[in-house]
Amino acid sequence: MTGAGLLAIDVGNTNIHFGLWNGSSWQLSWRARTIVDKMPDEYAVLLRNFLSSAGLTYEAVSGVIIGSVVPPLTLAMVEMALRYIKTEPLVVTHQINTGVKIDIEQPQQAGADRIINAAAVVALYGGPAIVIDFGTATTFDIVSRDGAYRGGAISPGIAVAHDALVSRAARLHKVDLVPPPSAIGSNTIHAMQSGIFWGYVSLVEGLVVRLKAAMNEPDAKVIATGGLSALFQQHTTVIDTIAPELTLDGLRIIYGLNR
Image (cartoon, rainbow, N blue to C red):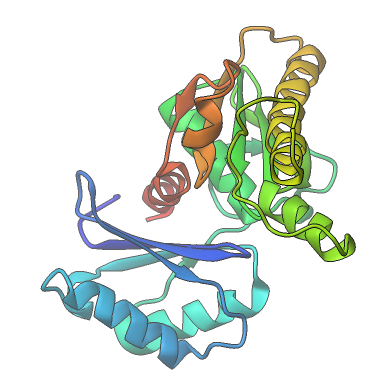
């Protein structure tokens, strides 16, 4: 069952995304900064405050599923669920039923987020598809026509690339990650914005072309998620669909398969 009161927790390297599923929709959705050394009790207080803002308590949660790429916080979230919600959470790994065949050389190395996104796409859209997740890293994940996860590509996220450039160049400073007035920058700020933003758009477009060719699926759907997905969709034609809650949807789908 996917059931009312399912708390889905997506632990990423930059943010933690919490969602409360009420049986038909995401009743609540919150994000918090990822702080690796934060204690389970601290995250419990944060969760309590999120719930109370909607007039809810821990009792509103009947089940918990965790997808995490930060091992120390996986343990913290498990402990939080056990101590405060009084339920044993389901933790996503390649060993549980995800509804997706993980067809790569070393399945144990597949990040939980990539498995979860693939599961969501198989259930909601079907294959063949490419999932682009704009996060700390930008990941490109391949779902085959028969619904298998076939790997993909991982590149630095645009914010990571931006920070790396600024930290290594003494005379360059942070700029807004938006397209400049022209691809030809007439000042340092616009030149940086052109190189970073349009360079990143070109990275996305180039990888999509190469991945479709490698899949031999020129009409594969391209589904994007993550905080910057809507911004990039405005400036490229390679993204077919934006799915802001794709990872949370993958978590609830996997929970249903295992409960």
